[in-house]
Length: 421
Image 1 (spheres, rainbow, N blue to C red):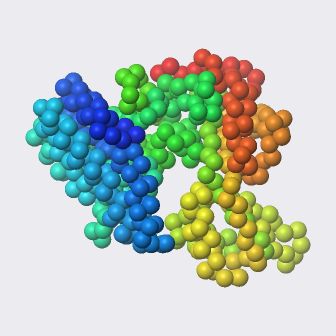
Image 2 (cartoon, helix red, strand yellow; image 1 turned 120 degrees about the vertical axis):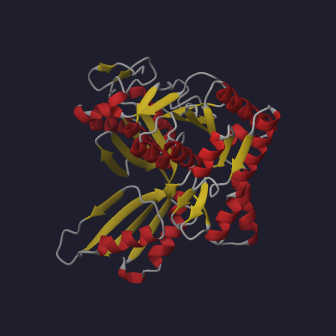
């Protein structure tokens, strides 16, 4: 059997009939170049949003299991239509649901995690010289229920299938040309990155970069699947995501990322005793809330009360507050929420061995009059929670201060060459 390539097409890439035909043509061209092809498709355009609106028209709190049954239809429509277009181009194509493709998940509805990919049917179809189209974003749980993987889950589907069938590469086709040093809508002269390491991409995805979904990058790193993020609308190379050992350079700062969809919860009067924080975050984990930053103020006097603040995606705020309110007064004396928060981050593998980066970030934001509410760091990332309406200016200021628009990236004291791998 020829070498296998997995191609994933996002919602904007299959938004209408002409774009579906264009995707079909690209898939056929890859097959005619000598590869066996598996394509993973997202729902068309705004289909998922429209399905959510339908659910909200009939229920103020839709049942998660039934939401999965509803939302999984969008990707199936895309795959069936694209298979028809490929067949009209003279090739044999077969569309498969997530369950037919052998994607097995846990039982967590609307945010399921892939446990296994039993790709026997995919391999059999490839051996029969079929182009295989797999519905993204979905699978079947260990209790035989339809599940969905959460926003951006089609990326994870594609990487998981690529790992299962031993694909040469997983190509992620989207409406942008690759991964950039910042969002080009905010920084018009942001540059496209030829390569980026899994570690950097993980931090970028977790910090708001919407090009690739976080879990897909985690899966790719763990399974050793190379990702090529590229445009659906042009043939130019995009950005290759690969292991750190394969990159030629480690620039000080690779990118500035941001999010304007953050929320913060502050718990005031938390008992200062062992297990208090554990109870809080166990409840949030049980509710499937993805907590990001956590900060705790320790009481200065014996018998005092602590204050814990944490951030999460705004879409999780309602579920988080409900989970904590259900615990009653034992969790805290008072809870305050802020739904209009933002986050700006800088990411770069070269930060590990270069002092002064944090100081420069804080100085730049201070010079713009931007107040930092919370700070989180890792060896290759610094994130700051700020007011939502200051995010755009913060991104522009940091991108300019670290001189990321040019052919190379400039550090605190010395220039680093851009990677060209």
